Length: 330
Picture 1: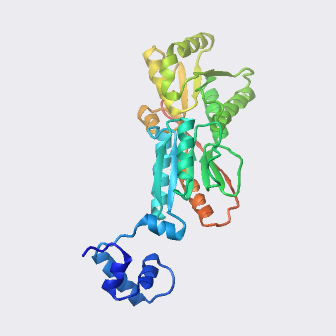
Picture 2 (picture 1 turned 180 degrees about the vertical axis):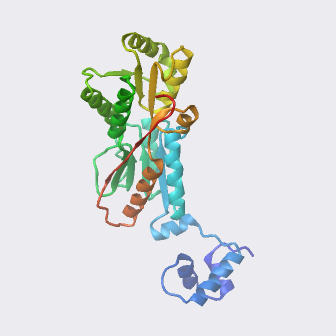
Picture 3 (picture 1 turned 135 degrees about the horizontal axis):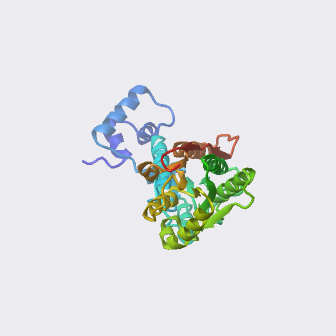
């Protein structure tokens, strides 16, 4: 006879249903001998508890929702993978939702997940507005800066410091620095990078910093290649050597390969610094600003679980240090 419920385990072990329940849920009092016998019978008969039923009894399904704008993006994927691993070690399952950088899709996911499906959320959002559908659900926002509450945490790299490091590195290499951004300049992470770059180059004697906005997503920058390289070539006539600080590695990698195709020598004429340190940066040997995805994931996961366990949290905003990885593009 198949063992499908604790009633079956109780029948086989000779213990009451309540005793079997206490052992399997590790609650209440019971002897080691009782526990060993019940666990042995459960394992021998391949008994598995219904996680939904168990969660409803406990008032928690031990499931975390993770919203990501683009799971194919290496930076996002690294954070999601490490969060998943951490939650799994702590006996939490995860539901990963790819929002396609779409505000409507993100809202729908949050509304559905908040309806007693998940215990908490990790939101890597690219939307300007923060969802109102969270129903006061414990949430970690990565690379966003919403208004904080007792059940909200933010975790992000030190984007400002990363831009300062990149700008100084380009100037120190004898470059006239410019910055290349995408259309998402309203996001807090991009704003910090732009501010860090602007203030730094001004402090180095460049009164009118040049920022080129592709007005596209990072993976669509090829659509405006001619426009961008028209500006780059014009600036190369005015300056002996240019240095581009790209808003991320996707942009940096495209500019690097396109520059070679245009006959521009890297780094002799054009130096390039990216941001993230994704696998493509390593493959192409791009100089970049490394984001510590392991630490971002650890801080996000550990503190979300602290909220769920109602532990005291002294800090709700976490800023993770970044570092320069120098390779052949500078």
